[in-house]
Amino acid sequence: MRRAPTTSKASSNGNGGVDGRRAFGEVVRDLLIERGYTTGIGNPDWPRFADELDGVNYETLRKAVTRERAPSTRVMESVAARLDVDPGIFWEYELDRARRSFDLRHVADDEAFANLQRWRAL
Image (cartoon, rainbow, N blue to C red):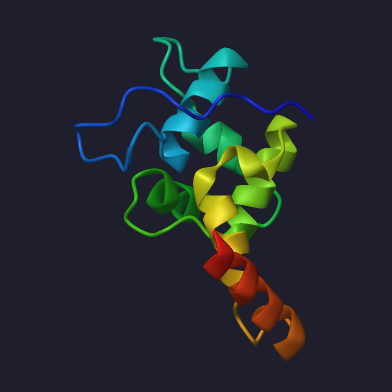
């Protein structure tokens, strides 16, 4: 799997750029264009791409791309798998992994506590 760059100039258009990080939708858009998932005028062909995703429909993808909803882990993993990239390409995926490392619904008490201690040491 390939890991594409995720940094660029900070977004000023409200699409979620934070200190040079590019939002999920921006990264996916660029990867679709790079791979030829485009319409006749060169825009990403979102419906065609959504049809090729495992367990993700077009409306779910659209809401994640436009930031109407935060992209779920399932959406990011499905998109990454279809595009043959590591899901860590999306900073939102890495953030979700960090959150889960403290969440007692996902990790044992000892692991969550150890993660908290490591985080405090930073």
